[in-house]
Image (cartoon, rainbow, N blue to C red):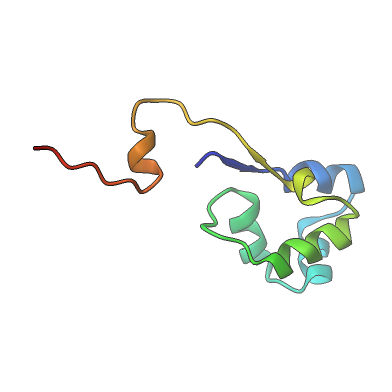
Length: 84
């Protein structure tokens, strides 16, 4: 996925643990780990706003876009291509 999650960077800057962040945001540590490790398919704006409030940052400090590498970008974007 071309979206990279940089929660680890902000946690280190704020000297905060994953458990503390999860508690203050109001989500489970397991769900925070899914987001932090880039395995989440979506994030609610309310959760993103809570993360930004607790970490005192902007959404762009937590999420960034990187171009995908390889030739299969259409399939990764959910674009169906038919032949023939």
